[in-house]
Image (cartoon, rainbow, N blue to C red):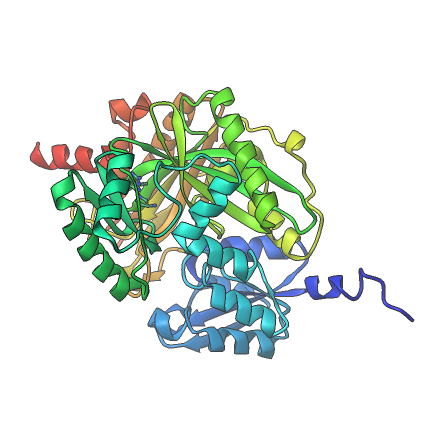
Length: 463
Ligand code: MV4
């Protein structure tokens, strides 16, 4: 009997078992989504995570290597072997680890499995920040002023580019991103030295000396747009988030929508993101990162993964982003259109980290007591429980506290209440710091930029 496309070509898209190639709260989040979709789950762990609670709720649980992430969560062969042993048809990479590794996405597909994420080629295009910028400019997405090509070697040409952009400029590595491999140049006499230093750092850190130059924006906000796309030419954007509240490129509080952005300002930007996705044949979830300054948006990078802060968009849009992400990976037509997307109310997320509230140094140990808040408009994404041992090997994120309420002011009040009802003992956490931040006046007014938190901390330390 001839196979229909449903059963042959699309057969490659179908799977009934998913390896969750991650740990912590996101492993829990993905496992729940899989179960709701009737999919079997394979949890993997390193030796440090053998006691992880999501191990016992998965259909299988495999220890794939030692505690060091390089030998476990980043070990591509071990993860592919786990998938084969468990008879899985797909791998969900979560965030971090292998989630934006084009070679891994390619290896997964070559092993006959589905990578729950974009194609290896999309990941590679966005991983190179110059090719990402070129793709976005070609699609009509507004970008930071500066060429979408690598800096040449000729000093005179470089000087001309900087003068054309206008000082201050910023030198960025094509292989960088997320704050790595960049240097601000305030004036012309510092240009060549800055380029030489950044080039050497880029060569060492990313294996590529390729650099580009942009206008340096001095007081922007960090606003991002969430998209989801299927393999059938459908793409939608799910509104925007403000992630300006960060310290050393680590986000601390995120919110949706970004405060004070008029719909007619953001609408064309969202549509341009959707257009860009269609133009590059993007499939999966993705985030367009923008700097927003003086009423204008400037694209900087695209993240090709599910992000830590996806819940604030889930709360406002009502879309289960992880469920939709798995659906499009199965080859399904996106079950929502742009007209279906209506964002309501306001959502905040606090990242609760196992770290000292003042020094920000990581804190490992056993959680001796845990109380989590609950009630209308409160959500907690976590993998920890009383008795849980926080290991020193990984990221310090132990829980995400998420609230939703009709207005921004009500959502802030709800977060204050939720933080008051959160108790973690046995280890240090940043909860005291988060409580203080939610009492801050300018933050309550929505008057913050990417530098606000670090300035606030400096003032608090001086006081
Ligand atoms: C910039 C910028 C100002 N002007 N680019 C840092 C992370 C990386 N995604 C890009 N980053 C920046 N790029 C231009 N042309 C300022 C930053 C920046 C930043 C951006 C977003 C969130 C926090 C930040 C903290 C410091 C610098």
